[in-house]
Image 1: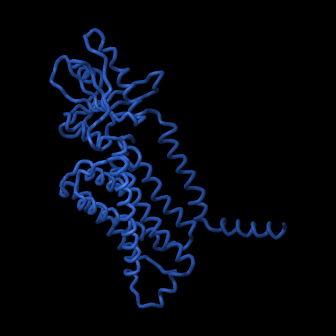
Image 2: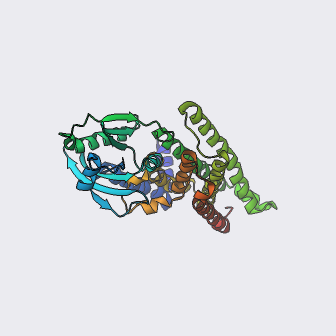
Image 3: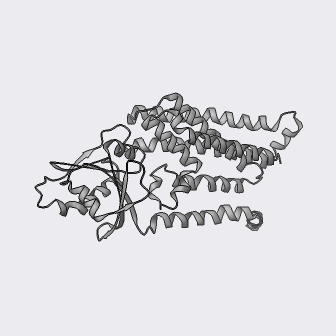
Amino acid sequence: MRQLARLIEVQMKEIIRDPGVILWGIGFPILMAWGLGQAFSSKPINIRSIAVVEKFDSNHILMNYVLKHAQESSSAEDQIRKFEKTFETRAFGKNKINFYITSQEHATLLLKRGITILVAHEDTHGIRYEFDPRNQEAQITYFIARSLIENNLKGHGQEEDKVQPVNVPGTRYVDFFVPGLVGMGIMMSCMWGVSYSLIERRSKKLLRRLLATPMKRSYYLFSQIFTRMIMGLIEASLLISFSLYYFHIQISGSYLDLLTVYLAGNWAFSGLSILSASRTTSIDIGTGIINAITTPMMVVSGVFFSYHNFPDWAQPIIKYLPLTLLIDTLRRVMLEGPELVVVAKELLILGLFGTLCFLFGLKIFKWY
């Protein structure tokens, strides 16, 4: 028992003497728990978004309700008017609803991009709500929207509102989710496949032996990147193929465009992985660095839910994170099928980001 106690004491001292272990192993998880708790558990207000199909009719009760009770926002895009309404009820707590008044075509685009999760129409038979019935947030938003306007329907001879499941390809939650999974897989494949591999080999003194060879440092790093790129392409192809077969998702863009987006995203995270693993010798510190890069982006970049749920001041920052750029571009190519020139800006940013990270990581890279 005395020997066991002494060995435990030695191991504990080795950990405590390395400040990086304390920071990434203890401090960072506490900070992440605090940040996520602030974002979700202690949320002072729930933000929900509804697309309202615009009709130029004086008897349009839903339109009149929005114009009368909500405040217009200046952050609306072209051909889309945005109105905000904040309210509090005993059943649903404090909520802010963003009403996007637009055409049917733009309402569908808002659904595909995850900006809204519900579309409201109005005709002579009443109000129709379109949403994915398997999306729990969409169901709650439907009940909130109905409770807000049901009093305005009384006395107007309207029939009861109707729920209509979305039937447009690309508007289901699973259509939104699969591109997010593909983007997250690219990030994880690069950061753990390349970055962690380099850190582990450096810690085991394996990289040091390569100094005796005539091999260029850049060649070795490129071999790591290209190997992981091939493996990641197989993983992404299997995931997309499974989604096509099982979930019946539809790829609106060409597969060549999808491959181009994959290569741009893979290069961006490959460069970042080289930079993050360029000097670290401790596996514990390296794991902390990788988690510090991947975990926040996995939460805020729109993998599981739209980043438009975050406060307005944070969205311009989140929008230009590498994972957000990758996932947004993947969703547009997969669900909307635009020409590649439409997403050229995002591809250029990803390529430039990966190149700068790679060059700087190559400059400061050390074998031991």
